[in-house]
Length: 287
Image 1 (tube, one colour):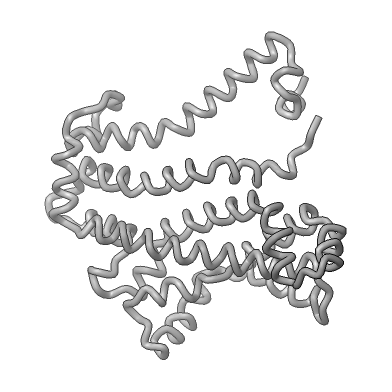
Image 2: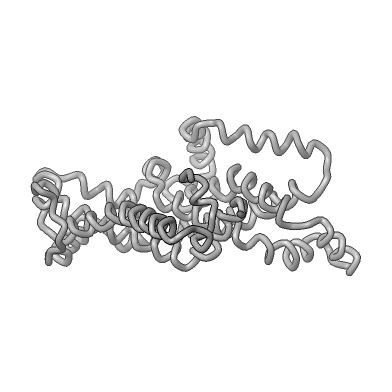
């Protein structure tokens, strides 16, 4: 039996030996995925020389508080954390709402040049993000939005991937019969969208939200271009400041900050994991 066939089957459909192998593979995959995060925490709890230890340290130390105190001395860490949380939340809510609306329109409505517009949206996915930095910066400068959160939020309020993702999901998940039944009952376009479509496509919306939140949270280049004041720095710029030192890199300090900056992503994923997994596996092959 090939590996692909094993994973297409449910654990209960496998024999005893197959079930053991199935769970061993899952455990190994989980350990491999978790290990980098664990090792980062190990380095964060030891002194700055732990990263060079041979063999690598795998036990926790007691230096996390001291390392994090140095983080607070070198940067406005919690202020930057709050800035990133605000920007990522605003962008995520906007992207999920507008991309869901656009995806619903492309999937369930007929209007002139519908396919042309959709292909144009898809074509923008092939344009490297770096090519849009200069014209976007010029627009932000003319609007006097440089060094403000508006320069981070407004250009990212909708994206092509979100429209494509929601359109593909809605086209199969929301049946036309449900929409027609809503119209017969006297529902308007937005009421049908809100009361009929939204409950069905919640997994896709959660998946889009968590992916977009992670993208905005980890963005470094664009905030570095448009933000000038330290009080507006996002967490990624604050982390970059920790690398600018004359005494050599303090990896314990850097890892303690990185570990703390990763925690909000874990919390967000745990809160929405049920919908995210449902959205990602919606097209899986069933045995």
